[in-house]
Length: 336
Image (tube, rainbow, N blue to C red; front, side, top):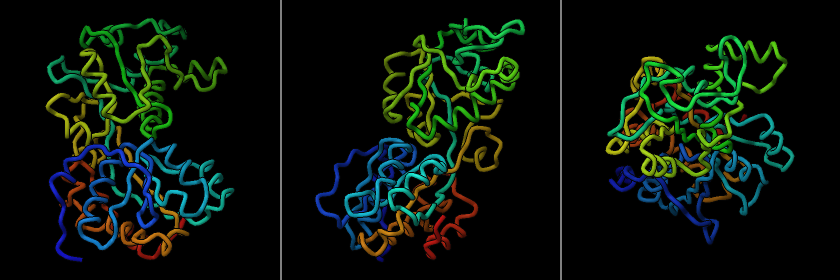
């Protein structure tokens, strides 16, 4: 390989829409919209530095990518699924049923989930309780579970701005939604006493049941759609990955969560409470069949790409302190 080249356009790109390759001499990747920009940066650098075609990278969400990945083995199926959460047992079972039995799990680093609003609007300092009380279908008022009565943020918490609640959150096919539910909604449900109230009432799933009056809006597209919604509604607050926010600070401002401002440093230290590892999954049966698949996988997690001084860190990825172990596992083609 010649001296590594990473073009400015590759690092700057935040999203890509690619059609399926006409011939299967290209690696095919699908899945998480959070991992999408990182994968795109690596794919473009790979195409510039290796004698293989640039991999085709598509989005669609973690769940969609893993479903496509688990459809089977063969040149008509994707080679890699990007994921903003670990693969589920049910997804592994689907893979097994369709003959996808050898899967390599690759952790590429860490990302934070942030809450951002229009740059010229008021500042927000949130807690998980604030988000639960703003979006939950039922909340605790005077010790009782009631239908959510809140319409403004200062009704949820008097320290928050007097602004209508308008939340744009990832749809259910996105891995980010699961992390949001676990780290924010469920944490807020517990903090407010709603979890205990649901248990006492014998209600299952109450902590993640959201109101359906239009105040909470699921976004099935990627973060650019969420950004567009905020552009159309200055009261809107969206859920984003840290890297997307950091590349759109001209139009967005970020809120604190539990008193901590999200940043690469606070995520790396574990201080920021809403962070998660990012992954991709490789179909081992395709290694040696699809040209460049092993090389692309190793290149993705190399020090020069995924290390703390690489282009992925420049875009916002928090480098994995155990990257060397991941590199060794990829080299050995270790499966789950």
